[in-house]
Image (cartoon, rainbow, N blue to C red; front, side, top):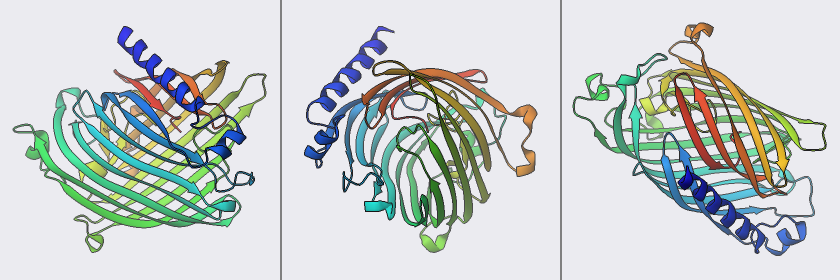
Length: 368
């Protein structure tokens, strides 16, 4: 407990110092002055998938025109992290609104050395199936969207995913069952994306809607090794409650549906630090996923806040196989510390509880 407390204090104090000394300031005038600056930030994260990670984050929040209040804040960030599970994570990413939000550009590149766990495929795999598998990942996703109506964007996204240098346990479940992609996989695909977005601030909304539909078509003609389709729905709603202190109700529904023969790392995965917290990401995986979560966020004192959350979700091989009696619960709570009050950038600490499992998460920005 003491080492966790010291780690949290270190990140909070370093973040506050950096954001207050010429980095991303809480005032508009300071933002104008430091329009082109990057903020280096020491990072400590924790999750069931990663253990404890240490590294550095470069963050830039900016607008092309600070006088234009109709254009939301863009961000570029890049991090390098090494974890206690001997994982190496490198990832630059960006979300850019051009002037007047005529275009929305998003994307990320990942290179990971990633020891992971595999439990099998299905919604009722036992804990004793757990086996470690190690691999390298090189992936990128880039999205180009054009505004066709106020708050409504359409466009195209391309994704590439290469999993290589596989190391498995002897007589592993992956190898015995010849699970698709057990010896590595290259996946490439693209497809249309539709987004309706009225959120006030992207990293921590207090009002508005977010609705996304995407369809990806993966195939050998794009350089991949597998032919399959993936359809995704992400719907969110934020309510700001009337009170002297800021209080937010947030809801999210995620549906991920895979048709065809996909490698196991491209199947729908339940769990992680964003939805269904408390479950190891990929603890349950199959063709299809549906999950719903709600979160109540409220200020406590100055830069400190808290949240409570709950969710329901499950995976299934066929859409008709979803069964409410077998649905999995998730609930928990957490603390928040605002490192940038104007843009509402938070350090978050969450503790999630699932069915016979728990997860501790220490990260930056909200889960959704």
